[in-house]
Length: 311
Image (cartoon, rainbow, N blue to C red; front, side, top):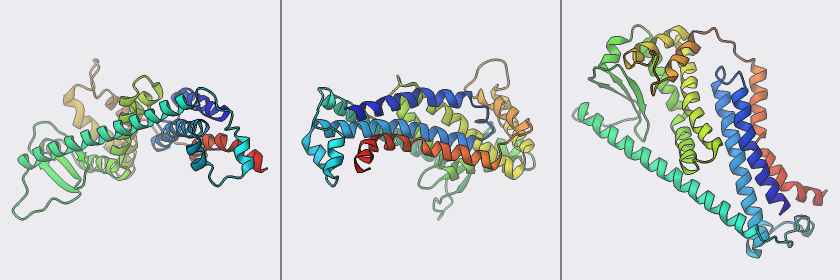
């Protein structure tokens, strides 16, 4: 049971230290794409620790599982794991972790189904407010123009993704500001940010008592907006993108003293107007490589006895 316990401890350590280190980093707002990747690697490492611990605990507890896991392993490798010394908690740990995995999958399915139902409802509303022309078929990337008094724009993902813009946004946005808003929404679509949001919401909803998953969800909502802002600003300029954000949100009270659901908008505008102090390409590469190694550590821990036996 030493390796399964070590994996659980490693997962707990990653879940505690990963968010703290990322919260203290001063570069995450400047490099949201790298920060998104690092958060995914931290969560993947935690989940991988649990999956490997479950597999090895089940191998300790049940001979049938052991035969499948170590079917082609040399005898020395099997002996190195000391699977015969089954502790009383092996089966319990395996069952608890398996239930956690099934619960995670169920929460993800629920989130995807719920999001799909919401998209279908919104798409039906769009067809009522902006019906297709006779003979027109819904196609991906279709631009939908809605009559509306509030300036707004959003991307509706799905089998036939749609970019929706209100007439108030067309009247309010000037020059390249509309292009910047469209580029922002297209950035979400190209990076498939909707799946990141679904996965983070499923983990946070399924395990509300696990802080790393709640932090993962909150940071995904914030970082995907920053990443899309960067994509728009690279094409149309930081000032243009910031002014477009102001024009879209100034009537919603987000720039007032009180808290609002869109309280992140002023921070996004300030970030765009602040002269960028980006990391060097080499620094970004090192951070990305370091993050990529995080999920590899649980695999190495799980393989240590086998590697020692083969060595």
